[in-house]
Length: 251
Image 1 (cartoon, rainbow, N blue to C red):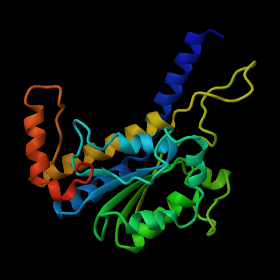
Image 2: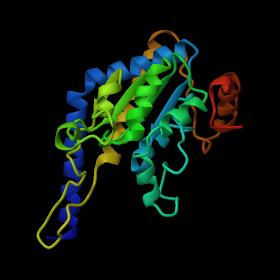
Image 3: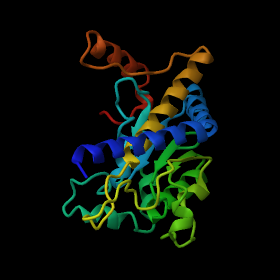
Image 4: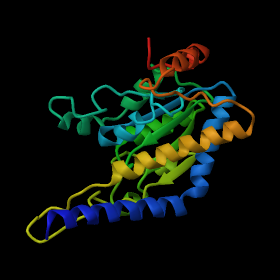
């Protein structure tokens, strides 16, 4: 099989997943966007969390041109990327009990805020406890996960539950257990994961929905512009000044 054919198959698989999410998750994406718009309108704050590669779609909506300036990354040290040595430490930390509570207790998140938790499997202790603890202190929780893992795997949390069991809104990425879209003879392991493509698209769809909902209420969405276009820095400076008390990714 030619490499170009494999590339085309991956694009087809990703497009198929995006179409499924667009068609099947539309009501819940609208609900998530409304939750975020409600928080912005009420003067509350927005946070996004993900560990490992699930941190990528979370980071994608923080300090982003065309994105809401109020979205903050809720960082758990050692879990947000592959810059930790060894990289396997991040995966290990996802299974540590009580870490989520310590992070939330020291964060600025509080009653009425919204937390988006991204976890492909939703089975590890960290995202499950993050959702449970967040709701306990009054946050609204949006979970972005693959619901298939709840029937295809076992939870690693002591409760036996998954992220999806502790959310106000659950957005299903439709990713199959194992997160690999391709397999061929001659390669023993399946390959070509699509979760980042699909989950990032879900996040941007939710942000777009929130912006539209705010505009429909007659409110100006606090959006950032690209710093690489004329006037972008000046625009962003005004937004940062106006909403500075709800922006925590800057000093």
